[in-house]
Length: 304
Image 1 (cartoon, rainbow, N blue to C red):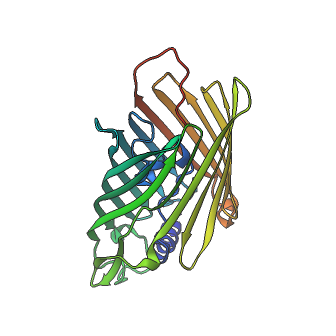
Image 2: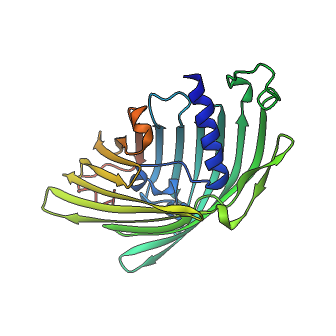
């Protein structure tokens, strides 16, 4: 299996250079701030969410991502703030990003629109010494591990009301580019920007049942447009379950349950549709969300 570490590392590093696609999030609709800083305060209360994603399970060195978000409206409700932390592990490389979010929210009609910015820092490490090679004196991988530290920044605009949302964002303006000699530099080239457009609508079918549909479109120059289409059914505001279709990539099953008025647990499983399906048992994502709200006998009217 050692060869898979090298293969995946090289493939992902190549994709990271050419595409800089933000870490995949099947459960984006539950906590949009992970892709759009304009969604800060989305839950209209202090919210903390923890997610873990393991991709292509069964393949050594496949991507794993942990991310934590905490965000809330401030006392002056037009302002919302939050923090994000991501940690990615791909083969022998790892990357950590810490971001501070801020959003200015304007009421419009039955909803509100948020204009968000985020800024922070990204650190990465390439552990070349862990790569198993056929030649003990391979200069490429015996030259030692290297690391980098670059600033991070992103922006987005996000609209929501009680039954719908829509947003457009660029989660990352700055990209780590290899500069030779084991050094990296931050690049703000437009060709590396990844644009994310998301939209969703919840429809009340009856007093007990709801239907939710959403889409996520990701675009980056020289990379084919990647759409996600999601359909979820809800029951009594307690349970959600459904599917996501990502053409040419995966079909996902998503389920979420409310433990109590403040805590929700979510799980998604991605069945691969690409060539790696022969080697992998799929991808898994687990989420835990806690919203600091007061208990009430009234039905929760919050969107997602």
